[in-house]
Amino acid sequence: ELELATGQVREALQSILHTILFLRAPGPVTPEDVHCEGFDFTYARIAHHDSATSANAIMNAGTNAAPMQPMTGSPDEKVDAAIEKLLQTLTPIGPELLSGCLTLSFYEKARRRQGLFGFMQPIMPQGEDKVIWEQWVIRVVVNNTPRPVNDDSASVIERQRIQDTSEGMIRAAMLRIFELVGSTSMDHIPPGEYQFEINCTKKAAIGNDQENIYARVKNMPALINLG
Image (tube, rainbow, N blue to C red; front, side):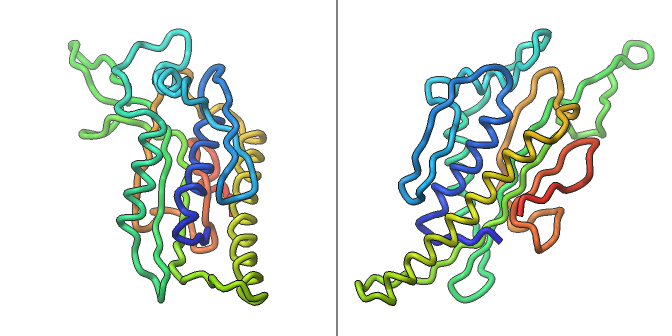
C-alpha cells in the first residue's frame, strides 16, 4: 500500500487530491505550481484565488446548468479536513503501522421526474439524493517507526532509503493519474452541475489488497488500478 511516514502524510495526500481536483475541474482554471517541501517534485493545483470560483463551477458545469447553493467549504478546506480526519481515525494493523482510506467522489444530484397525476417521483431509491459518477480511492499505511537521526553513514543511508521509497510511490501514483485521465473516455462525466466530497473510511468497500489507489467510474470497468 501507499506507505508513508507520519510527517509525510499531509503533503503526499494534498498533492494527490489537489491533482485530481485540478484535472476534473470543469472549464478553464488558473493552474498554480506547488513545490513540495518534503518531496522533490512539483504538482499543479487550482490557484488559491480560483478555488471559490472553481467550487461553484464544479457545481454548475455546463451552460444550461441550474444554479445551486454554494458549496460548504473551499476545496482546500475539504482536502485538509479529510486528511485530518484520516489521521484521527487510523486503524492499527501492526507494530508502528496504521491504516486508513480516503475516497474522493464526484457526484451529481439525483434528478426527479414528473410522475403520474403530477406527483414527483425520485429516480433514485428513497433516501438517496446523489449519483456518484467517479470515485478515487486512496489507501494509506502510516509508518510510525522512528527514523534514525544520527549522522553516521548507516543512518544517512536509511533516511534516504525511506525518503526515496515514499517519493517513488507518490510519483508513480501521480503519473498513473495523468495517464488515466488522459486515456479514459469522458462520457461518464455529466454535462450539468456536479459536486465532490471526500470521505474517510477504515477500509475501502471495493478493490483488493494489491491496490493502493484506484478509480471507479460509471458505465466502465469496476476498477482502474493506480498501484
